Image 1: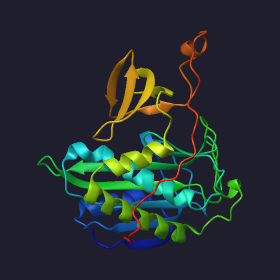
Image 2: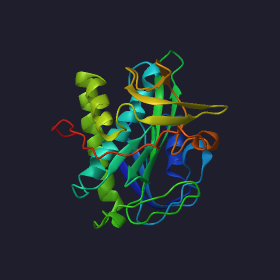
Image 3: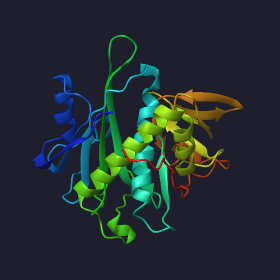
Length: 272
C-alpha cells in the first residue's frame, strides 16, 4: 500500500466527512486525517461521538484489491491493529477485549469505537474503505447506555493523539502485509485472542429482531458465527447487546452476560 499521509487539524466537524469527500474526489489510498477536536463526530448507527481534546479522532482511506464479500475482514483487521496498539501501552494485568464488530473494551467498559464505511467499485470489488477511529486516551466521556473507560483511567500517562496515530497506522501496515502474505487466518486467530471465549452466550440486536446463541468463532469471510440450537449461523451485521433482553433476563435460565478476556495480538515484526 502507499505510505500514510497523515494531516493533523486543530478542529474539524468530522474527520470521517473529510475523508469521505476526499474519496469521492478520487483521492488515492493512504490519506489519514486527525482532528484534536471534532464538533460533529459520529459513531455507529448515527450516534454522536463526544470528541474531547486529548482523545484520538482519526479517519483514513484504503482502496484495497479484493471482492466486496471480504469487507468484514477489513473491519476486523482495523480492530486487531487497534487492540494491539492499545495493549502495548497498558500494564500486563489490564483487561482488554474486542466486542464484535466495532468496540474495544477496557475493564468491560468501552474505550474505543470503530466506524467503517465502504463502497463497492461497481464490478464486485471494493471501491474504498474509510474506517473512523475514536479512542479515549485522556478522558472517558459518558454514554447513556454503557460504561466508558480511558487509558489515563487505567493508570498510564495518555499518549499524545498524533503519536498514538503514528503507532496505530504502523500496526495497520504490518497487519495488511500479513493479510497479503498469509490471508485471513492469522488475523482471525489474533481477533479470537481478544474476543469472547468460544461458547460465550451472546445477544445480537438487529434492525427488527434479537438473535441469541453462543459464540462459535468467526467465519472465513469475517462474519460472526452464532450457534443457535445446535446450528451455526453467520451474522454479517448487528450490535452485541451487553445483556439479554428483559424478557430473557427475567427467566430462571438466563445465561450470564459476555465477559471480556485479556489478549495480546502477535503481528508480524516487519515495519509498514
